[in-house]
Image (cartoon, each protein chain N blue to C red):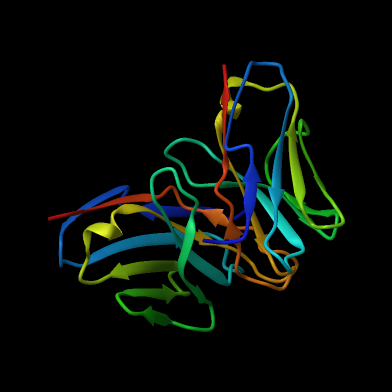
Length: 113
Length: 113
């Protein structure tokens, strides 16, 4: 198992609400990436944070936003939730921008009703 | 952007047989190709990866091959065991400056006794 942790494990929200998901990176890792995994699909890249700055973003609307803290933990915020936002949200950490390997957390299962 | 296609979507083999999963990618600049195994309800786990300067890599019963000219790579599992049953994802990325993975759609491998 990796040292990447996520909270909460499960979450149920209603359409239009806002949600914050949290990720603690593995010790020594300063880069965190977030992915959305819809049921039966592969993970899709949302964005990446390196040393508290956003370093690249996938094809997701601005209501998906993030933050990285000085200890390199990270948050994913989603505003104005839609039914299609129901998915497993995964974060992955790595040692830095030059590091290939990403280690995934267990994910947060978000259900939007 | 990068597009990764993965086949087959489901694969059923008898215990002890070999399993092969194939992926193609579109961006010739991609140079890092990991494979992840995801058991039901668990995080994706890196099982093997290959970089574009290598044509083949092996780790016990698992091997990956890469054909840069054709832009395809494959996962080979020999002597399959029931515990190999899971969903397997291939991915591609360009390393350096942050490693943003583009995933395939996954292969559900079932190893039957």
